[in-house]
Image 1 (cartoon, helix red, strand yellow):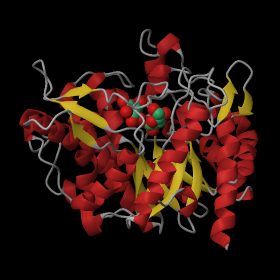
Image 2 (cartoon, rainbow, N blue to C red):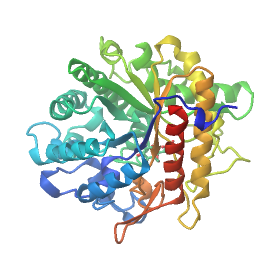
Image 3 (cartoon, protein in one colour):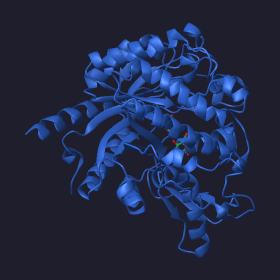
Amino acid sequence: MPDRYDLPTGFRWGAATAAYQIEGAVTEDGRGPSVWDVFAARPGTVRDGHTGAVACDHYHRYPEDIALMKNLGLDGYRFSIAWPRVLPTGSGPVNPAGLAFYDRLVDALLDAGITPLPTLFHWDLPQALEDGGGWLNRDTAHHFADYAAIVTDRLGDRVPAWITLNEPFVHTVFGYALGTHAPGRTLMLEALPAAHHQLLAHGLAASVLHDRGLEVMLSNNLTPVEPATSSDADLAAAQAYDALHNRLFTDPVLLGRYPDLSALGVPDDLYGAIHPGDTDLIAAPGLDGLGLNFYNPTRIAAPTEPGLPFDFVDIPDVPHTAFGWPVVPDALRQLLLSLRDTYGKTLPPITITENGCSVTESTTPDQPRIDFMSAHLDALAAATAEGIDIRGYYTWSLLDNYEWAEGYHQRFGLVHVDFATQRRTPRASYAWYRDLIAAHRVLRAR
Ligand code: BGC
Ligand code: BGC
């Protein structure tokens, strides 16, 4: 059986973070408020009222964090750019101090021999745009393309590859359908125009980036969906969920068409959001790579109550992370094979842009995280042996950070952060990953 040591030569080892989850400094140097600042300040939204106001204070401590990355031996670092730092009101005047921060960050990464992989949008929409309708407003897609141009004009000379959006599924569903993330809207399926406008934003920005000779990826959170039983009802429910979670965010980009959502009762034009020509705008620029964020498979049953046409069912008899997510590493291999079945030649090379788990703080010596990462990397090696083109792995996450609605309670870091003192302490998984990266380099150099 191939394992992680067999991953191909040139495989990129990385770690990932996101702006609002680590930067802090939310009112510094002209940054405007984002939807997350406003949402987290509202009582009852985030566990224990935690906010990202300080987070890991990475805005000031980035040199220390880059030293940790360098010592780890990373090839690449995925981070996100806070739109409201660059454009405090989302459109309109540029904030030079905000752009200068990312300029310093990029240079410091390059000095450390680490390739920057920025994401342009990881959920922290400028609040001023939200006040104008946020992702429910089509104009936001055009503002995003303008923002992409501004950022890449500044950094594109040193940063070759870019991710447009992080997980439009999670942002649409948690942010606009269920309201558990910012901006906290509870529109249920009528949130879907927010999905289309994000995909349109991706397409428009992808053209901007390609015009500048840059590579473009999109990071989707995909999950293999399995029916709870082989009954027709469970199978239909699983297909409906797969269309909503996976195909809705990948078909338009890779196939130039939307999946059939009629089983959900969703109109073909997504409640009027899709205009003629939009699917071309989304697909035509093409994707140089598909970013895949993988955490867990999903088991679905037919609904027991009226409402949505599916129910979530736990996957018993497997380990669960501190977050309660089932750990099924082979599901990653199966997902990769099914992507090839679905998209064939249109499937671009894949980069795992997130994978990792939260571990209970008292767990020593961090063995569940090591087991999680090693098993998922073994699954990647198995998929590679079956012919899937996988270019790299960015673990989530470098540091313990602000885990959205869970505040600081879920700890995903290879490095422990004491949020009272900002002291960073590498965990056992950090040493394990460092040794794996070093061993892989030696083996591949032979
Ligand atoms: C999903 C994860 C996702 C998370 C977002 C979970 O329900 O299983 O894949 O990243 O929600 O917080
Ligand atoms: C997101 C991250 C998040 C992680 C764990 C993904 O959904 O992109 O921001 O911290 O999963 O929930």
